Length: 103
Image (cartoon, rainbow, N blue to C red; front, top):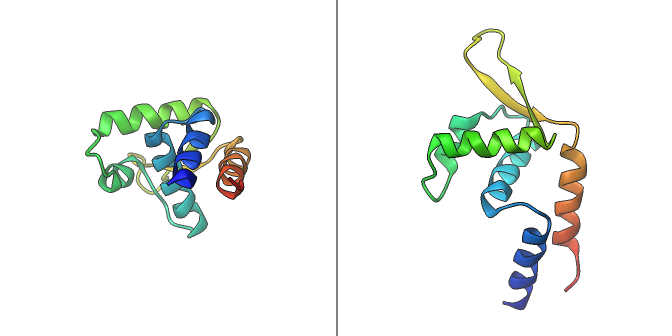
């Protein structure tokens, strides 16, 4: 239990909410598996029934931090997909270092 407590404390000290961590982890998995993901996909995976507007607000915040960006689907101009932003790799490295830290 102490390990879980330390992990959760480390994540909170990183400046991300649990919902941000959930979104980032789902985006990470999609990028690692070369799957396209959008806000609707994240909404369907969300365990706490967050509204789509909340998901969009969180994604907007992540985009402002440079963690994600959007890529327009040129075949269907109404759809945008989430892609890596300029700060994506450093954010993943930071979060991974929290996971790898020995408590």
